[in-house]
Figure 1: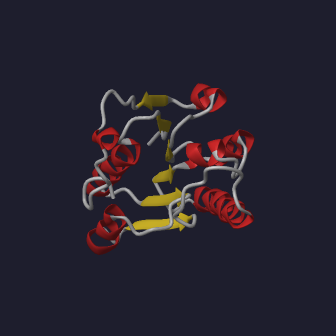
Figure 2 (figure 1 turned 90 degrees about the horizontal axis):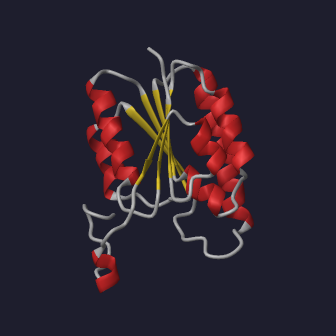
Length: 171
């Protein structure tokens, strides 16, 4: 099977959700799936569900679960670098049909690694592996290299009314 590079980006809700929908579809079709999450370090509801109900999906997190507002801390950069190395390892290993690099675009935006580093991961991808990258502000070069780019655009969100993230819906 020919694999492609998909990017889900933009300021709207649903990038990770869309990637996880594809994970569910892939598992249903018998594909082997790896999900690597950058920045995130908490066990959100979707990660709990994957662990409990879809043990065939390998999930690893490469972050400390905190927002990076200014310059990233050294431990955030180290975690992201370990994550990039792990992604290259996963792609080279040939064990997975679908690889999701959740929040990889956000990691570039936050200064955890450069767009060139992420493009090198694309270069390491075997042609048979589907690679999905999510996160706000995907760079122009990444978008140009991708086979599919979907931009989630926020038109209206109840967060602006003060609604906090709810378990099972936003977290």
